[in-house]
Image 1 (cartoon, protein in one colour):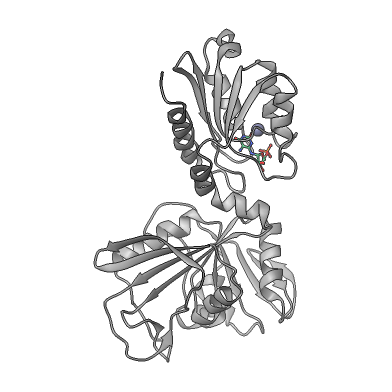
Image 2 (cartoon, helix red, strand yellow):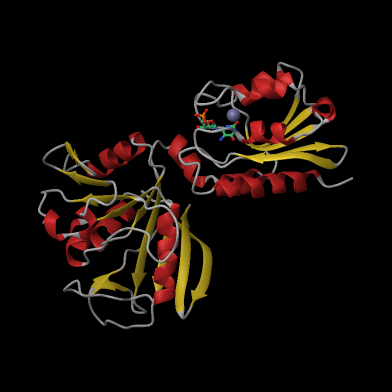
Length: 343
Ligand code: AOF
Ligand code: ZN
């Protein structure tokens, strides 16, 4: 008799093969087991296409085994007609004996209704298997659904003595080239990337993915008074979707979208708008003022910090996190890398 959790671990492993291709949908994996033998596997591969359960059932050669089989799926099977028909109905049609579920689906269209549909059709359901692991891999989806905003990652590099930049904004580079390569991987993993006015102006970042392969995030800049010289800055080069939140006007101009927010509630309005545009995660790459605003509003989920070897002695101090839990600490070619989670 094989430990049942092993099958759910396999389903979680499969789920993660969808990383980067399924947002704003969750990553979902599914394993079908008959007599302690895996007879089918599947995962949600591309947003808008077949769900994990559909692919897993399709992969089973002998469908007559299904009524004697158990399914291990990392998310509650859906009960709604979205871009695809309800998975719960397919499971009922094939009369699977039992379904093990890792996480409930917080999507209000599903939220418990999938389980109900299975149970009311005589299928045994067990929920909560490896729940924490599931929460972890779909943290973005869960925050997006439960809090109605993107998952927020703050990222910065600071000197050994705690400065994020020199007083005159001349700070290139605090972290080493390996650390910077890693940041490009991170950019490829998130839907949107945000910088403030000063960073856009003084660093002139391209905010694309270069030292890694992967999709470019949507570029986001906060420029309250529309002071940034668009013709001079890389982030307005028109090569990537770009959103500029400001206090003055809303208008679409090719790849650039201007969105008006109010000066005293810009953060909430910006996050609500990003959510509306189905951007599920946001990495905030500076500068200090913007990062501190997010820290002060306790509006963050993860903070990723590189600590380089230099001493500045003076300059712009790094934000100070409160309520942070150290989730990972390691060396990246001589830099120290800390990852904190909020709460
Ligand atoms: C599942 N299995 O593999 C996934 C589910 O637009 P649709 O039809 O693709 O539906 C998207 C919603 O379905 C998504 O927000 C989430 O609630 C659920 N995702 N459900 O049973 C899957 N990816
Ligand atoms: Zn489904």
